[in-house]
Length: 88
Image (cartoon, rainbow, N blue to C red):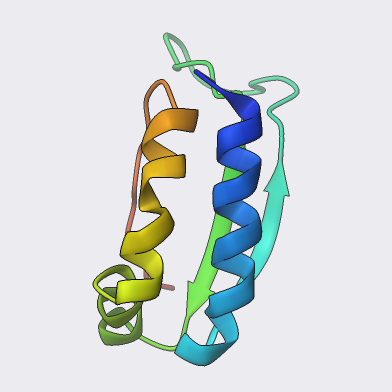
């Protein structure tokens, strides 16, 4: 983290608007250990969010509400990976 307090504020505000975009946080936590893999980047935290669909994610991240607090994410994270996943 660059600033863990800023990132905590970001997550708090995302949680408040997620239901309006049919989203929910499935997991939030810290990495303990890598069991399998070499040269794996160190993650301080993982946030797994489920949305009804990709469109809902895009609607949320382009909303005025989200854009008003997005800066907390940028201020809080040193680096980030944003992945879009689908089940198989």
